[in-house]
Image (cartoon, rainbow, N blue to C red):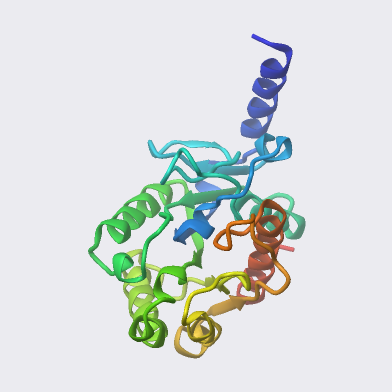
Length: 252
């Protein structure tokens, strides 16, 4: 074992030891398409365990949350919003034990997330398994790029999203579960980006206990499709602040 591997092993063990009781874990479901799954370039800091922050692996096991959290497309999965989201919540409550439930899948449309579809069913399955270890506290959603090329999909987005979330909350037994949605990147060039973003921004008018997060000034990784690593870290922070605005019960 190399010196670096030994240090990482020690760090992982320490992170697990500081995780608190699994029954007390605060859980968040991460769903949507590639910008939720994360395509940011991984740096050394993204591989360092964060004490008290865990992820549900593909095999439904808890592990220290190091990037990539998602496994939808292993060859390109990278930094997402999850770790910076959790870090920000820990600033509000350093004693929290946070469990992230990655279930996003790149390149998917809202239609593919409809109830009883494969992606939806898998997300529910993973969330229910995670809930054996704690309390589900919120849903984080980023999607819409695939719906921005077709006017009908764009203009019906809010109604379809509200229906999906209503069913998801019911299936998870959490009718008042906070939901946070994010704006498409300013760099994206879908024909109906503005319509989708308007629909996302007005989700709180249709979905109780939901919040919208701006992507203002966030940048892409050079492909006009995916947020870069710096922006994803900032986006995760913004998601966390939006969640905190919805959940007055989060310990401070």
